[in-house]
Length: 338
Image (cartoon, rainbow, N blue to C red; front, side, top):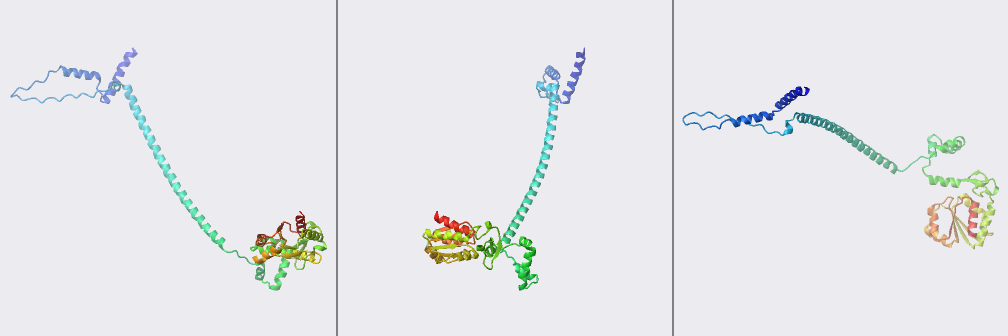
């Protein structure tokens, strides 16, 4: 009963869909074909009588496949087409959003390139300015000039400096910056001596003498300088040295050695040469050629150009790494004995 009642409704629905799409049912096509085949063929009109206009031929609708005649497949096709349209709309919206984001990224990239170019230009400008500043000679003002600018006269400059050193010496030493380092180093090496309280280690006049522990003494190093010089002299005698040249050492050190050297007592010649004085190449070659030993006192005031000149002259050289007089003398003696 339910099957029979539902059949007319489905047929009516199918007919309505086919009519909406312009599809002629198969049974209607067949009925039309049967009617056309039952009609007699048209006869030629008799002469003298007017002819009637022929009726237009009936155009048959295009044949459809059997699958297009079913309502389920038609509904599915329309649903699929609608889904495709929605998909196309979604892809179109996505492409528009991607284009917007690409345009924003391009704008950011352009801004980044502009900022990078600006930073590069600033860096080049700073580099040129720094190079120009570094190429300028470094100039400074002496402490004496600053004191005179304070209103002091010549006799008052030394007095004020001594007072500053006594009252504010530590602060002054911290804030002073030395531009010409080598000359100041040379002055400090020549004008300051660290010595112990032994009588043999007395400093000459014009030199600032600081009393330190014997092991820090730059003269004897905590030992007897006289005994060290005697050991040195004995080693020179045993080695058959007749002429020894010592290059380097501060003026006070050379004075100490000159006081210890006694020509009648010692049977070798000792020549003391400043390590900062420049001599001609001919004089250097002559001194090196006549010397049995050239001692390079490396830890004292010594210009490398001076020491290199004596080493290049082909003389027998000995480099001493110690600063104190006694340690230097004992190092040379041990090297000669070895």
